[in-house]
Length: 60
Length: 325
Image 1 (cartoon, rainbow over the protein chains, first blue to last red):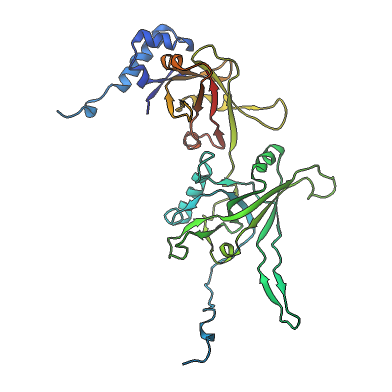
Image 2: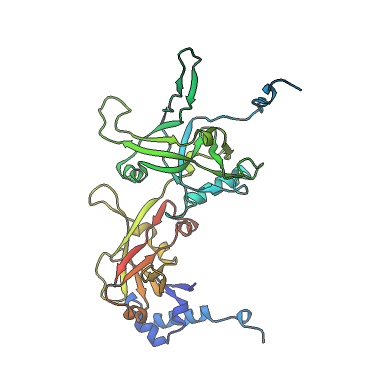
């Protein structure tokens, strides 16, 4: 199940966004009326949201 | 050794103090929901289970569809069929099947929704004026102590009325729904009930309104605009739920599928509100979208009723919509 996060009036698919570069994400989602700076911030939040925590990492 | 079998006919006839009987019906619930013993273990649990069943999506076999509150009851049970030989005695050849005709004050939109049940056979539960919820013990283990599954009896439903009033009799212009039980045995021998909490009101359980999703304007790319309205019977008056619920709904999970049986997932990258169009903006992954053939059908699946209810949006069901690339 993809993970979504809210940002302004948009709910972004963080799971998908985390697989994209910042430029790809900004180009893909530019139609929402957000500034480039806001989109970059959203992308950063998406990546942080799906970044595995220590608890998620396999024990080696 | 007795010379008769009379001691083995029938059985004990003692009654139980404070047991009840069927009272005046207040509300009918149609649908194939079957309550397990854990769901009717106590009144509060059963009330919660009924509400949960009412708040499932269409197509779920565990869903219940409550009708409005009943305003008048007519007992239309068949008379027993009787006959006798020339010298008697009169015998009953067949028991009349139970049947009840209920009257409702129903507006046109709801009447047209009721028509979906006209001339159909479905299971039905009945909530009566004493807060007892009536059905029957279903399944082969019908007489297992306290573990019987609890289901609505099979009934034949007809929906009529709702024409013009005559300005004279209150019984004109009303909606009448007849509930005719298919099995006397299920109604009598296997009939059973569970009690709801004393504070329960028939008004606690209400049917859902269908919300239709559609594209208000053609899409130019992988970005789709989706409006959400309740189509009603009055012309040019469909109810747009944007102002009340769009922000909350946009914050819920939508999914999309393609393929012959809609088995292939299509990634939704974002869902947003469009205040100008009063619609949702749904964006599909452009790479996956581009790879689709022209005119590919995409099934957009909105949040479930249960998800809406959990967010405080009650009484609505969002229907899936098929959009085309």
